[in-house]
Image (cartoon, rainbow, N blue to C red; front, side):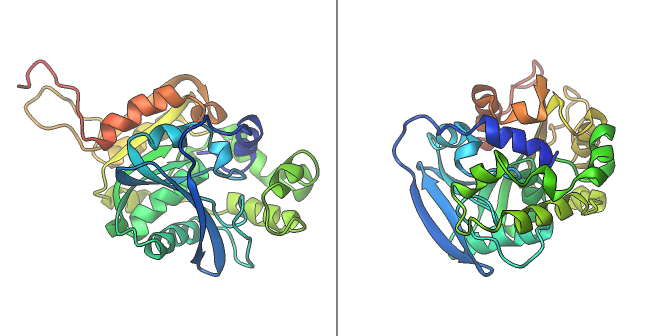
Length: 289
């Protein structure tokens, strides 16, 4: 997982709208003092989609309409992102997770699969930790459970972050396109920088999870491969197959030649991985009937 700064590049590069499909239904829900914007598209089992930092629903690109071909997708915009207003409250992963849980209550969604990218993946992980009854299956793209799992270059960059790195064109202009309060970018950025300093130390909580998860990362992501494998092992993965025991319910996928910001734009490959997982389809080995 890289949060904030790396996701900025994604937000800028993926600014085009998704390809044409039946128009999603946009609406607002009262969530913890916010008017949270969300869109519903498709039919089928419910799937909540959570975007990365500084992103919104449009900048998630074509993966949402692709998933909506077989699922009823609930795509939300987090505090201060897109059309959801910012409030005087820190942006933290527990807060974001509680917002998702409150949103699900507001739209009468008792339980759902959840797909999160980057910041959204960390929020999804916290949702499973804090509100396990609301999560059926998790798809986590570019996530970590401990800051020590970040690439050294990213860890070195965090202390250098200042609002001046973000305020002004083109980031501020892009944010103002949807923001309910166009004058609120600087305080929003300050909250997002503070999020980068939030300590992550969730190993014990992750190890207790029973939620099946698909963990996705690029081979050149901002999370080290060692950390991704460690997380997979925490949730029961990485054991030998073909030995008479069932495989773990969780799965791991590493995308080749893929940086952090390139993960979300590989729609065909993501869909090829996500759809069988959500459907409970498992490749059969030669010793299985």
